[in-house]
Image (cartoon, rainbow, N blue to C red; front, side, top):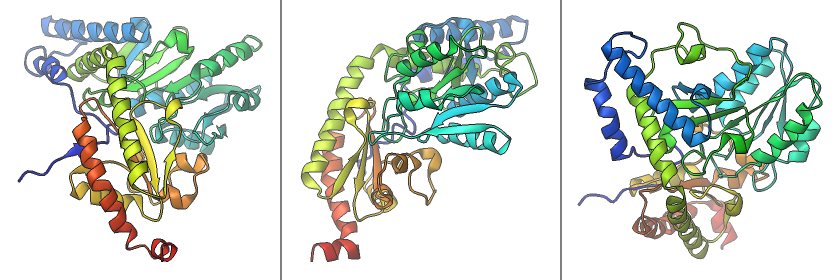
Length: 396
């Protein structure tokens, strides 16, 4: 009998919409030209590239000239951070948070190793940065603030608009502007992204988080932003990102972004209902669990739960044996023996952090999926706890 499979790791990646696959197919066999070529085949590819750029810009309330296609969210983050600092020439100060994706944190560590000063803002128990803390962190030589829109492990949504407003006030009194970048990889397709309303200068997104193809991302760069390329080799993407454009994936990106953005309210309601059903089921059937983060201040699809007295990785593997896919945090940190830097920053104790599982619901999940998880999960937790000396001593 075929094993039931339930995919609850949609914050790591998502299945590609059938309409997106169809959109991409012609660019492998029919419209296969290089968008930089002047002949017919190149012009057809350029039309497709321009259309995708216009569509993406419209969905972000930006202009086409402000959209640059990249290979992924990580590359978009790197171009934003290093591109701004390289253009500035003089080394200075950067502000970020302790819960950023490693694409940002590792970039900031590299900056520190090369003479920059970086301030890492703390977060509260829900994983939210303080606007007041950020204001106090600003220095005379601050060049860049980079704060993610929503966290990839607990889903906490940061006060981006409030931060942007404070930076606007600060910049009005300064000679050298502080630029504001946000990693919106976990919110694109889940929240309506209006770059004008957000008030940011740079924004990074990635297609595979909203049912598009892997290997393609985008970076919004506000007109007038002083930014330099970090790779060299051609005039592509208006000189900011060299390399022949991946027309098939870029077209898939735009199509997936269009579909996801058109049904945000519908999907969010259904996904939130599934998440809350899962949460209620866990709390009612499994003792000694901790919900990490605040669902009311988070994206609708992420539920991070610590199961005390067990290892999260052991539970992940046991669930996988039953056909259920979850994660212990960011997919980019898989294999690390260290407790989650996000949960540590939120004040979760290391033992609880080691027992954390991230369930991330997607648009194709069903109530039957949740029912199956709630059937399997308590048994798996009980089985692992039965092997824990601490648990057995506590319940002797």
